[in-house]
Length: 206
Image 1 (cartoon, rainbow, N blue to C red):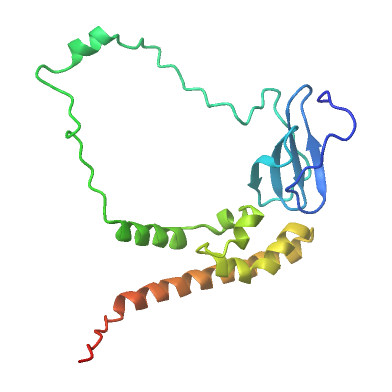
Image 2: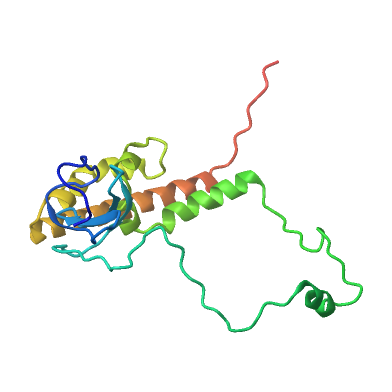
């Protein structure tokens, strides 16, 4: 339907069986859904998906709108008022008002405090659904802050992607939620111990 015939290329990213593929006539994109509960958007000329999203429900079909374009920028609603010209801007500006780089000064915290704050937010405020929708290569990143959790939940994540049984998927998801909460609790305790532990002074040898 898209103007291509025969084998174009092999596409990567899907885990398990694919339930449906849809492509609009003459379009350069197509969508897939399958047992791993991901909806993926592919460009026909590229082997990897340009967009993907994990959905909780079982996916059996997908339909693309006729004007579907994942790379199109959202249109801004027009207010109906014409933009003021440069002369009007000059007239509207207050007399004696001059532009200056010192009008707005934002003080940034030290880098160490900023890193600690970002790490705390990334652990305590991260949602499990966001971690389950990450690309596969992220789970192998040993420097990732959730790497230990990724190791513990590897078996259950595989069940979620490859098993069609709702009962088995429910058990796996329940176990992943417990592992995720245990990891967050351990991280919080470790952070508290670091704050409470007094700094030890080293004795100088004469």
